[in-house]
Length: 106
Image 1 (spheres, one colour):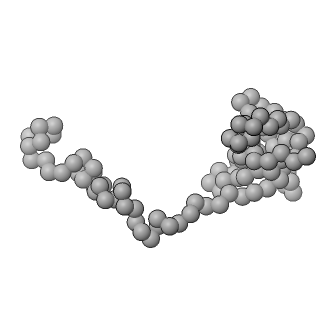
Image 2 (cartoon, one colour):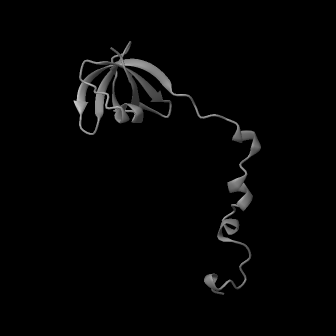
Image 3 (cartoon, helix red, strand yellow):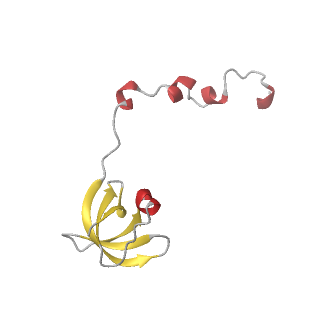
């Protein structure tokens, strides 16, 4: 029996793998309405500028320094960030070592 000839094979590759077409197009109705986990919003101070629009930032109220990157809208509008600037960041609950810089405070 040759797999590519179609002899003795019923259904598509997705069905053979256990994924019916309906499972891709129609997700489970119980989990379809759940939102993503919300980001943690904090304020921080930029301590060091790194290449590729990344920064070392120190979170307020803690002594932790994490890696921050500039959000897309801030890149689009050419908002400059320098060491010493106060910024608002969003931290994903999945990776607490990286943060998205979403606002530069005056």
